[in-house]
Image 1 (cartoon, chains in turn purple, red):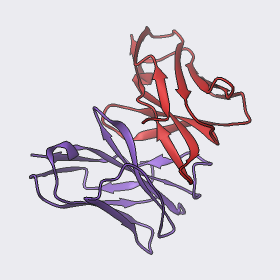
Image 2 (image 1 turned 60 degrees about the vertical axis):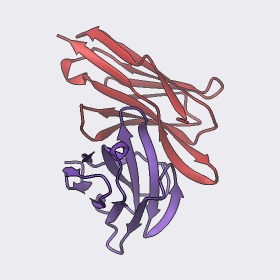
Image 3 (image 1 turned 180 degrees about the horizontal axis):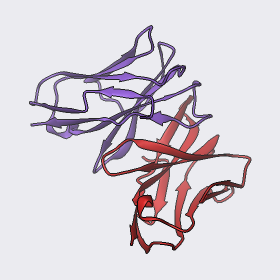
Image 4 (image 1 turned 45 degrees about the horizontal axis):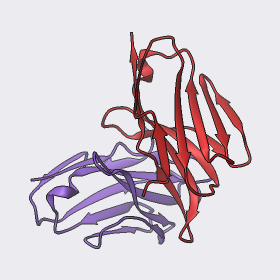
Amino acid sequence: DSGVTQTPKHLITATGQRVTLRCSPRSGDLSVYWYQQSLDQGLQFLIQYYNGEERAKGNILERFSAQQFPDLHSELNLSSLELGDSALYFCASSTRGGGAVGYTFGSGTRLTVV
Amino acid sequence: SQQGEEDPQALSIQEGENATMNCSYKTSINNLQWYRQNSGRGLVHLILIRSNEREKHSGRLRVTLDTSKKSSSLLITASRAADTASYFCATDATLQGAQKLVFGQGTRLTINP
C-alpha cells in the first residue's frame, strides 16, 4: 500500500456518460497529480493541485475537470466520455509543490468506455 | 510530446545478468527520476538524481546523468525474476512556467529464469 488511495479500481461505462474518479493523497502530502496512461499515448500528465489550488495543467481535455478539496482529497471528473478515454488514470501525491522529491502513485482506476 | 525517450523499448535478459536502460530528454531539468511499473499496477518511485549530480546508487540500482548530452541510464545489477516490469524515466522540468514531471514511454524489462 503506497498510501495514495484511488477509487474505484475499475469502472465500466457507456459513451456519453460522466464519471468521477477519487484520490486520497498520502498523509501529509499537499500536492496531487493526475495522469492518464493509455497504450498509444503512454503516461500523460493531466493536472496538478497544490493545497487546494490548481498549480499546473497538462494535456487535459476540456471535457475533463478536477478539483482538490480542503481535506486534500481530489476528484477527476470525466464527462461526455468517448471510447478513446478508456485508460488507466493514476493519481500521485508529493510533499511539495513540484517534483523535488519522488512522487507516490496510487494503484490507479481502470476506465473502460463501451 | 514526451520529454523523455527511452531505449530500448523492450529488453529481455537472463537472471543474474545486468540490465541497462537509457533515457534521453530535450530540455533543461531540475531532476530526473526512475519509476517501475508492474503490469497494470501503479508506478513505484525508484531513485531521483538531481541536475547537479552525475551518479547515484540505491541497492542494486545505479543511475547516471549527463546533462550535457541530456541523457540518463539506469543499471540494475544481478537481475532477478522479480525485476520484470516496465521502467520509466521522468524529468522534472519547468515547462511553460510550471513545474511538471513528464514521463518517457518506458522500457519493458523481462528477466528470464
